[in-house]
Image (cartoon, rainbow, N blue to C red; front, top):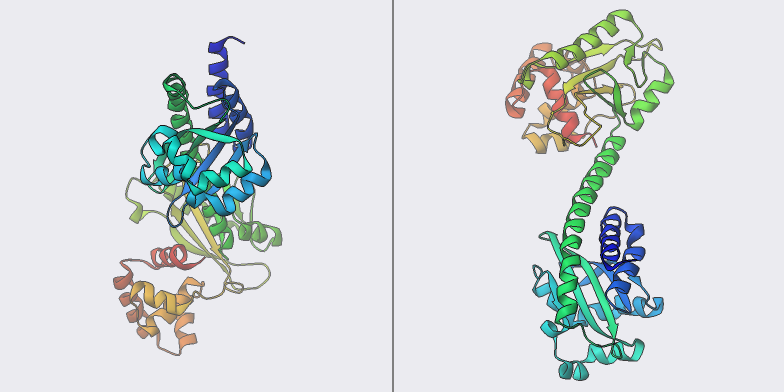
Length: 374
């Protein structure tokens, strides 16, 4: 393979590894061979407390040596200490960190020399976010010799691509983590949550929505649509969805809340229909436009009153009423359960609207569910 082809192959391997962590051993092997090294490592450095390497993938190292290094030696490694102190230095080599004479007297290098013949390092790093440092380290034995100026200059070309690859990988990894965390949060929500696109197709459903569909008690859905089994309820639901999709930029006037009776005779479902912000990345196939939250008053645990009270500055009486409303209980029924008059309940509801900066019951329930039901 020609030298230019080898360089291109290494660059491609770096981008591939940044997208898929399982490919780092191959990329490290390519780096080792093209730079005349005897080993290489990919690392992520956590310097928030005592320095440690939560991610450390190596090529051509003894696993027992690596385990000992991670367990006891990382905080004492002068190169690690230098990286902590210089997080924005793109390339670090031994000449910047420590002299050869100092190595001979340093406890870390004494320990390393007793377990490995590695002597020299050349490091490329990137700092994609303030708390994150990541990069690769190339390693040579004492017999092969240090990384000279020409070696460092050639490596700088590869390191430019490494920086870009890791920055892309960091963004994709962060997005993936956020997506996973959001999915787990929605799956813990006892309410059924469905997201519809602009064509009314279901593009996401949490676990509670899956369970609701399987019981066949008044609501069913497929990837093509969501259906209320009674025609009047279905027409009302489709009308709310259409209202969200056809409304202008003012979200306050979109969506609404309705109840859907159930063949089982259990209390009706409470269905909240609301818009989803259109601010999502351009490169995505998931473009939700409508959020539907379906609560089951017979299966829904009331939202914790103390959390409602603390979150919105409500009185204990107001929090009790808000909790019942969020669980799907109608205002008149909530008044009866709390042993207050309907007029008193209306007064308390008005005060709740004021404190939560909402104007309608549907808007209040949406706020409570999105803030506290997890």
